[in-house]
Length: 424
Image (cartoon, rainbow, N blue to C red; front, side, top):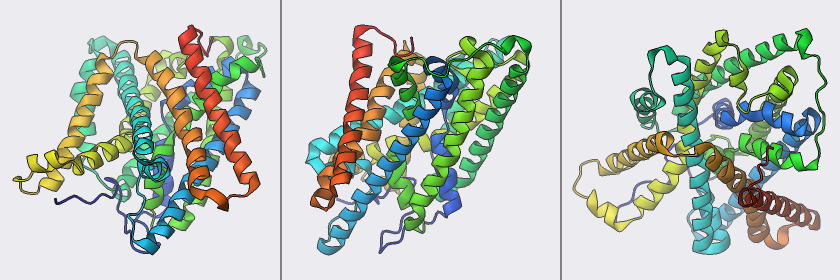
């Protein structure tokens, strides 16, 4: 059976030797930043309102540090397996699911890929949902529904962007999305600073609101650093893969400072009146910033949906019935994979316009799934795959991260089942 190249759909990877793909450090930095910036940042001021500005800042910094560490764990696991693969000729590790398979066989792969699918599909749906609702609000005088914006404007754009299958080619689009994100966030910050100067906004703001408020803020913080599903893809796309940890650290430091500033100033500006999405606090004459955010999310979408494309395409690529279905088509390798991408984008668009109670569903699945993907699986894989090579300190640290992830996910499930809101 002829198979397509199993390397990542957006990856220009040269798997020979220690080389990677064709992306430079600057291009990779742009791709990392655009994969981190998203709708989660818009909820940071509200998260700081719930937890307090000081505890929220410290919690976000801690979440960023742990997520960064766990991303590096994934790279270390892949590097060790690839070194062993060079000796016995095994296939190199390409995806998060491959690590799951190496650690726990087929169950490990299935669990990992299901969690990645839920996480990134949910995020992609949230992007289209946010853009449709906000564009409809901005242009309310034209009485255009959110669904119309999704299907008429956003779906064709995202379908066209799905034809881009290389991180290095996508880099200029990522830079444009980064610029739109930064500009829109700068506008929001400017409004926050102006609001702080008003005499009516001199009321005291809480620095700490108790331990039970921290899980909600922690969930938002983890959601903001949700690029863990792209870790292996981004690292493999670099021409000089050894530089990836430093590039990743630069991205986390910059985004971390920006997120903390965004959250603190937003909460200090509006206090207890801070909405769960900060753009709802903007005066009507700042609607252009909402349009800017929508543009940024539109061009961030291809990076967000990439892990979903990756998993589904690889599954179909190894499926005998799918290969037989496309056997007689000229250029079938490209056509079949592109058709799958288009169908995925269409499915996400339908979900964004038809799922009832969407925000609550995504909040629950995000807080649980993100904790498992960001903390539990990396630490577990590291313990399993690195084995006796770990020092006692590394083992203790892995177990601590594993415990934190399980407690956080368990508390989220308890809150949902018992009917308590983490943000209340």
